[in-house]
Amino acid sequence: MKLFRKILIANRGEIAIRVIRACKELDIRTVAIFSDIERDALHARLADEAICIGPASPSQSYLNIPAILSAAELTDSEAIHPGYGFLSENSHFAEACATSGITFIGPSPESIKIGGDKSKARQVMKRRGIPVVPGSDGPVSTEEMAVRIAKKIEFPVILKASAGGGGRGMRVVGEEKELSQAFHMAQRESFSAFGSGELYLEKYLPSIRHVEVQIISDGKGNIVHLGERDCSIQRRHQKLIEEAPSPLSTEKFRKRIGELAVRAARAMKYKNVGTIEFIVDEDQTIYFMEVNTRVQVEHPVTEELTGIDIIKEQINIAAGLLLSLKQNQIKFSGHAIECRINAEDPERFIPSPGRISLFLPPGGPGVRVDTAAYTGWTVPSQYDSMIAKLIVHAKNREDAIAKMKTALDGFVIEGIKTTIPFHKKILNHLDFVMGDFDTHFLERINEQGNTGKSPS
Ligand code: ADP
Image (cartoon, rainbow, N blue to C red; front, top):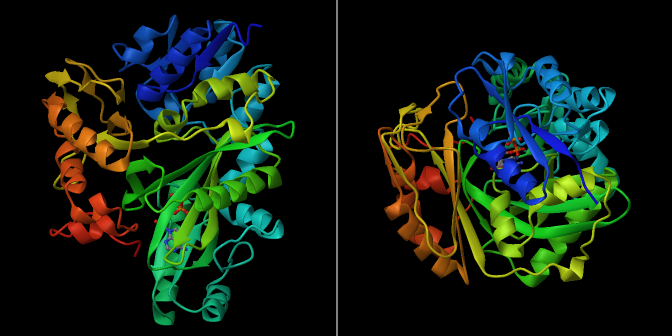
């Protein structure tokens, strides 16, 4: 059975290429979109067809819903894959696709809405008996309300934006006298970043790990999880290194967190692939944090561990196929690590766009590079600074670390600055090697004090 004849990929960079490759293997034709500064971009070259949809500014190109839908109609595309970022979590876009008779490769607009309203998602989960961090039941509309709840659950607390993402609109509040200022700052930041100032509140847990679970659901009652990923190595709440399994995981832990994730997906009547993010505290208590209703940057570590192609699963489910996998058929083998290579100054973490004069990625068994970069390509300043994902897979964590260090040493990128030196520093740190870290790891190892500030 032919799944789709033609898919338009509403994205750019490495994820667009990742989707194009999956489509080619499935014998589906592809359409790339590009902004007018990305005529030479690899994703536009690798697709069967490519259409310029507007100027460099994302709002006029990769976020331009009418232009993207016109491109899909013009090319007679049956479905749109949104990748991650851009329009991938925009429920209006998913609705607009449906109205135009185009399949959106992702969950329903209703699921996207729940995922995009973190306070609501907490409530949905709490009602279903899935543990959430103690906090507010729904939004906190006034400062007085925030004080009342904070006193009840006891300081420190964390104010978060309901519409939040990427760590923005978050403030840790240590004591009552700091709350007023933090409330207004978080509200303002959230409003300017997301167009909504709605906040909610949680107890701030001082030492946690970020552990998330990949799920796949066909929307017809079949849901499996593909195990957990540990994403605790973060800088300003942004993930830098991800690995699977989590160094703290045991078979029992995986079963427990996996079952919680499947229950969470069921509670949302979820369809397609998604990620349930959890906080795990020092006692290994697991709390639901949020749902990501799209494919994630770090999906390759799970693919390496399970041998399952997550993008193909997305396409299969969007085409209406039933999930062919049963939970007991999913096997986890070895250990996988991903380093996000950003075009950034590794000392100051400011973007370093420009022309790449030499790009020589590493290789060898168990080494995967997902990238859209090449020698002579100019990293644009208008988009995300991540230019490559380096993923390794080995039989255990120790070997995976050794493989990653070798791959990082062999990765040649000249002409711009990258985060490779920073990754090497982490990979050589004893606490990382021992698997002994929480989300504050980077703050602690950075003597200059200019990375990973806590959300204050
Ligand atoms: P975003 O959607 O902006 O990424 P998240 O809710 O996923 O925000 O939180 C991002 C990070 O903030 C987490 O990975 C964790 O490091 C930290 N964090 C979130 N909630 C808490 C909490 N209640 N206590 C301590 N740290 C937290």
